[in-house]
Amino acid sequence: MKITCYGGVDEIGGNKILVENDGTRIFLDFGQRMGYENDFFSEFLNPRTNTPIKDRITIGALPKIPGVYRKDLIVPTGVENLSNSVYNRVLESKSPLLSLSGIDTYEDYVSREGKPYVDAIFLSHAHLDHTGAIGFLHQNIPLYCSRVTEILVRAIDDVTMFKSKALNSKTNDIGFYKKGAFPDSPKIVHGEIERKCVSLKDGENANVGTISVMHLSQDHSVPGASSFVVNCSGKKILYTGDIRFHGYYPMTIEEYATKVGPGIDVMICEGTRIDSDKVLPESTIKDKIADKIKKTKGLVFVDFSWKDTTRYETIKQASEDAGRIFVINARLAYLLNELDEYPPEDSVKVFLKRKGSCLYSPGDYSSSKYEYGLSVDWKEDKDSTHYDAALTALDIKKHPERYVMMLSYFDLGQIFDIADGNGKIPDSWFIKAQCAPFSDEMELDEERFMNWLKTFGIGFDRVKTPIPDGCTNRDCDKLHDMIERAHVSGHASRSEIKKLIGLVNPKVLIPVHTMYPKAFVEIVEEIGTEIEVMLPEYAKTYTF
Image 1 (tube, rainbow, N blue to C red):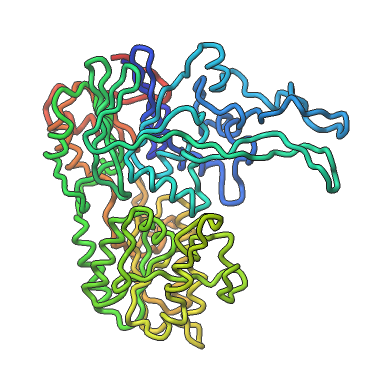
Image 2 (image 1 turned 90 degrees about the vertical axis):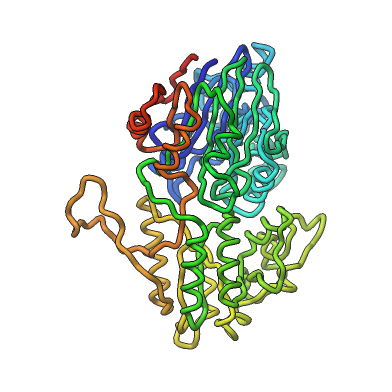
């Protein structure tokens, strides 16, 4: 049995864990290295659209793994039809710019070896740092995950610009302009492709070659999260995925360890919050939000991730406790409908954005169909649920004291229509129910957000950012004001991880998804067991 970590090493996210056993290989997640990519790319500087794999491999955002990547994302299909006989700068098929040196594509590997290099991907949950690079893998490699994770992956791709393309993607093919300024010049055209997805139930086993994988449902800040117990010819691996024990999912650490079972040889454990002992249950957040709502005379705004259905339930309950209607955005409404959990109209309403012409014209929603109704394909069904029944800014402005309104950074423009003639929203309050900023870009977004709140007279609680590690200067210019949070993490704390490791008692412990892997060594010493802590190196293969 062999394990290689191609991501999640000394970083949070980007997990790509290759497990090999007697000729069978599987990946546990294949996520985007979001923090790493942010060191190179930004909103207006991204990898080039039609060279996505080569650009990322060059800077180290994707690993050099043979036989897994789609050939058409490196060499577009039909490249043999390229010629510079008409336009002399057009690349020809043998150009080095249309190749990836030293790495076989999926197609090349199968042609030479007669079988794929990797047999399957097991996805723990639908966050981009676990799904975001799956779209670069060949579509013949099947994906295994929970049914809810499959729904969420599809919903994210349906309604956001930040698509994983894990299940549905587009081919890259050579086509030619038939008319226009440069007829017969080449272009990239796209077809549709879909990856096979196998949905797993809690406790269900999936057999892939010589590897058997048991799926375990667990709790995280998105629904459908999973752990996996991988059986390789009698040796067992526990991959925790991202996990917590303080949400609404009814499972204690002891119950989780019982589900995992005895005899774990290798435990691959996340450690996002290994440096923190703070544990807050979701119920505490509900009480805090409900108290703020009750003390506010006017409109209450709240920001949280639309993918976090646990937080949605928390705010929904808090709004009901305060006698208010919760007004959610169309993305969340779309997801709830896909999960068969569309809310009752007496307690939750959807907000209808003023878009495009700003006239509430049906045509304004043609480029974001989910804002108009519950369908993203008007060829099948031009659903108008939101257009017919949702609340507009004018509805909320009439009786702001009746509502709690979901407000994200990207929806701030909508508050122009809720403000009074002086550009203010009197007696209003803002609650931030999301994690604190953890990058320079997020800190800038936070400053902009506060500028909006102050300009429109929206109240909020503020705190200072924590003092950076190693800094003792409380007047440090790196300290900024930020909005106080009403939030609990989607990750287990140090004390919870310590207890979990003690109960599972693996022979070998591999920390991933953490900035503090050496903290696991301290935890094992505190437990007083003979567990071997193996601090992984990037792309290094370990044999067991």
